[in-house]
Length: 208
Image (cartoon, rainbow, N blue to C red; front, side):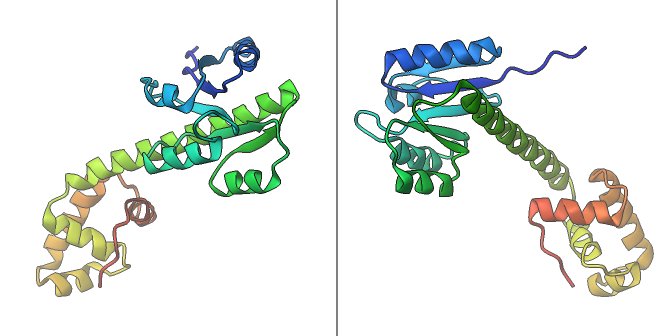
């Protein structure tokens, strides 16, 4: 049986007792946990490249959690965030959720509510990572196409028949068939629908 990949939860809270409580809670569910007393401490650490989420207190010394959410976004760090706060700040929670937070939990929260939130956050991160891997693989396959094959690719996904592609590119229909076969094989596509889906994921524009 294949072992499940490790999942990490990072906790940022300046309250030592909260860091201990959350560490014990998450470890009881066999999650890997790393705790930090400030956003700066987290940024200075080498975080593992694995499915993860961030449990972040809104009120922190130096920078609040909402501002730190913006810092992470600007740095291209796309980690799902579960906010927690001891203050019933509804406008702040709305702002956090609009910026992509997974949840906003008022303290004191139930353990189960926190666990439900981090499980949603980890699922979100896993889905994002799987999508990025798929696009990266497709990009690698697309980069293996010749310039002419890319032209044929763009015309094929536009719905043109081989005869129309031949006319557009001023080449023979037989040559189009050869290029089309190369595109299908190199892109590991089984059908035109596959190619269209791949083009959408890669942002390849249709021609013709």
